Length: 215
Length: 72
Image (cartoon, rainbow over all chains, first blue to last red; front, side, top):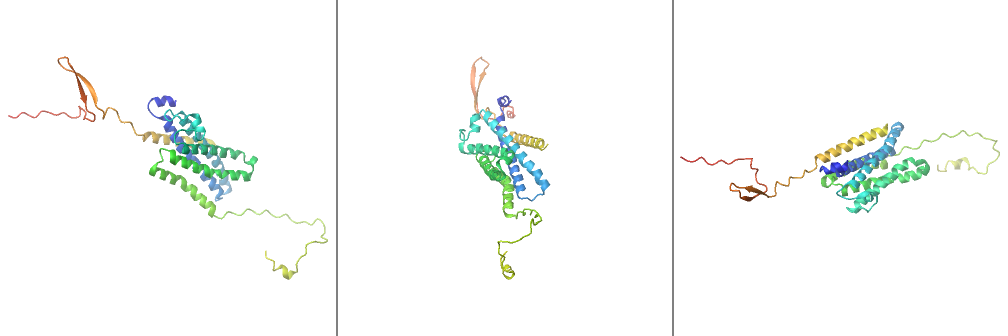
């Protein structure tokens, strides 16, 4: 279909690649924003659950758009990237470093999306550490868009970066600076002496000294 | 259901961006506008003449120049 439309004169593959790349980055930004909004704990439990679902779904939708972006570039008859050029970092002949960064970012996004489903297997702590790579994927995506994207050059590039960076930076600062809610204290179980206390090895200081001990 | 909404949203966004990119694409200028071309003209006596038409000249049908009105 792309080849047929291409023969009519319109660079369809090139247009699809550009549009899919822009939409993919917008969806990635939305997913990162949702994740940061969750971590600031500004929302109630019910909204947080809803947002967690959207956080995952937006990441997978962004990945689908990245796949379309790569597929269209592989099929483009002008730039001749091929399948290897869009899957292997450094294999593309055109602007190799920013293109390689985009490919690394795409693989990172795939790993992060898959990690949602492996959360229980890999453990909460490891998953959380791995999840910090989302910031890396976002930064790499922005670098790739600003250095390779033909639609975000000059003043348009600055506006693009400002629009997509603003919510992420704001929420990062909110997360760092805002006081985090304390974890709930679990109620103590009532102490029931199993047997009458006969003796203790710990020597208690006299009452007058006990008051002086700092808490 | 959330996945369906996300797919619909992403598809519409893609189509909208695609439309904007296609609409704002610079159109290629016609090649014949600024390049001189040669035309073979056959005269009354049957002889063929090669006439070079300058590029960028005003189209022949745009205006007509009339002869000045003879005095007297």
